[in-house]
Length: 236
Image 1 (tube, helix red, strand yellow):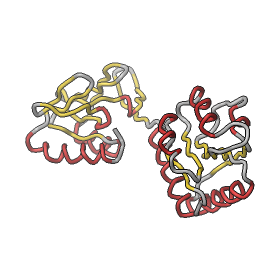
Image 2 (tube, one colour):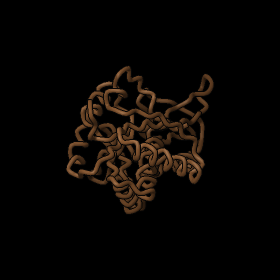
Image 3 (cartoon, helix red, strand yellow):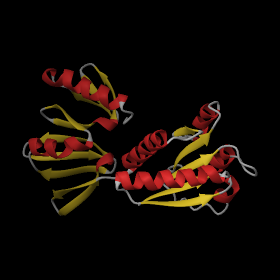
Image 4 (cartoon, one colour):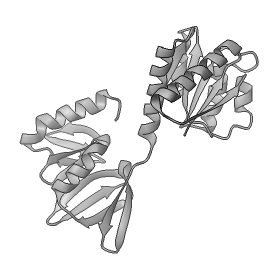
C-alpha cells in the first residue's frame, strides 16, 4: 500500500489529482490510499509520519507549502515531497527541503504519472532487502544494503558488513548469481563488491569503507562500465 497525502486548497486541482491517482492505480495495479489536506497547517499539526508521498501546493492561505515542508522535514526525513506550483522558481528552493520534484500547473495526466513513477521508484530504493546465509550456529539474516563486500577464502565466504563479519560455506559463483540483482559485481576472483559502497577507484583497486580491493585486469573495463551506469542512475 502506497500512502499519499494531497495538500491543496483549490478544489479543482484536488479533484483532478484524485482522479489521476485513481487512473494511475488502475494502470499500475498498485494499491494507493489518499488523504486530503486543504492547508499546510492541517498536515503539520499532529503529523505522525504515516505517508510515503506528499503532493503539496506551494501557495496556500494559512501556511504555504514550503513552510509546511520545512516543518515536516524536522519530523520526517524519509517521506517523498513533491510540490505543485505554477511558478518554476520555487523548484530551486525545493532542494532545501529535499523535494524530489515539482508538478507544474496546469497538471496533465501524462506529466503527473511520470512524476508519480519517479516518486515510487525512490520508495523502492529505500525498501530493505534481505538475504539469509547459513552460519556455524544456525542461519543469519542480513540487510543487503549493509553488506560492503563478500570475500572468498577457501571453501568459505566472508561477508563484510556494517555489523561485523559473517562466514558461510558456499561457492563464490553461486553467490555472484544470487547477489547480482542487488547491485553486486565481482571485481576479481576473490571479491564480490556492493557497488553502492564503492567510494572510488585508485591504483587498480576499488575503495570500500577504507579498504582497497583489487580489480582484476580482465574485469576492469566491465567494472568501470557498471560503476558509471550505477552512478548515472543515481543509485550511489
